[in-house]
Length: 319
Image (cartoon, rainbow, N blue to C red; front, side, top):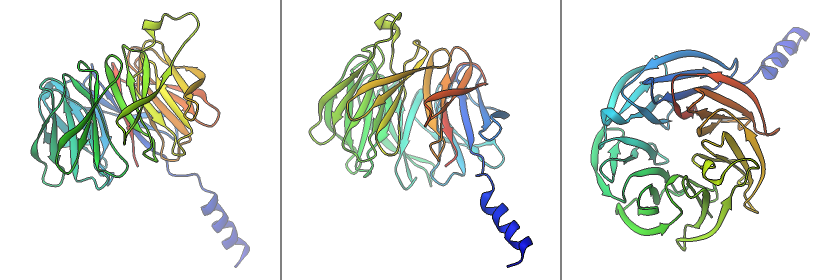
């Protein structure tokens, strides 16, 4: 190989990775902000329906789904054109949702009628509803796809739903106002945040029992100001990040010991978060300061703040 060819080959292999694209739902401005994670700049603002919250990519990466609660639907944004092109049928006030590994079935928490709607993503048709507790919100699915989890804020329960029968098989009582649920990647534990209770409950998914709790204490802050919401867990299941709402901090938690090792100061009223696919960065939505914080995961340090729309709530990053 010639020297020039070697240089070209080296340049190609040494080229930086393709930038990831983040989409942020802004609950008050009824928009979705698009962020380039290479330059950390806003590249577009997409107008969507009323009160967008839950947001995620379809498994194939072709669409971004956003739950527009006051319009009682889920809008679909084409990832290429970055325009709203379709909608999915949901129940009243959809908030968070989860999809199966194949990306064929979507499960949507409808806050106002205490149901989870089941949607066929290929046909874009509603298949039915599952009755759950009062004010359903948190949604996740087990790594094997067999168990769907829904948390109900007023009933204070994590509902375990068999995806084959679409029946509730267990109800686990947690602390007040559960908002989010996250499985460990090895499926050995389910973590559920309780906003008013101020804890994260650790549940054994097989025994359907709470086996531990993560608690938080920040000098100078009252207990009631520490309100856990979003949870993000590294792929190796060693570190969890927990958004603490009006405490304006992300707690860094050692998963094995369930102890907080560090608090990271972010924007005001931190809600949810998403890792870049390479897990180098964690982006958080800060509802009151109308911005997104960028965390260097390895350094466990906030490195950037990006202004977005009004009341940023949810975030998803292209797979």
